[in-house]
Figure 1 (cartoon, helix red, strand yellow):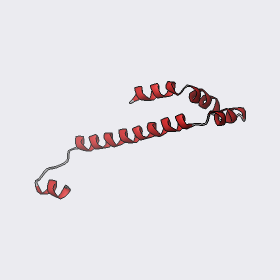
Figure 2 (cartoon, rainbow, N blue to C red):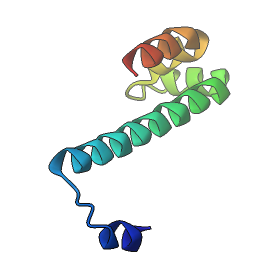
Figure 3 (cartoon, rainbow, N blue to C red):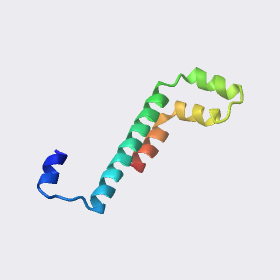
Figure 4 (cartoon, one colour):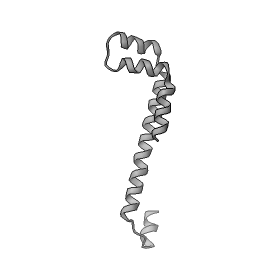
Length: 80
């Protein structure tokens, strides 16, 4: 396809490059949020509580999110 474009004399502009980079970044962010959502939904709540009881950093927030994942899911959907 690139050879066809090159043979027709079509050139890339800077805005085309920015558009492709922007789409790629948004796809990566979408994948990150999808993985975060899956991890949160499948998180074992007793394991999260165990981590909190051990005093692990961030475990308190993890317990809160695992008990009510709709808070996280609503926020992540509004960002995109």
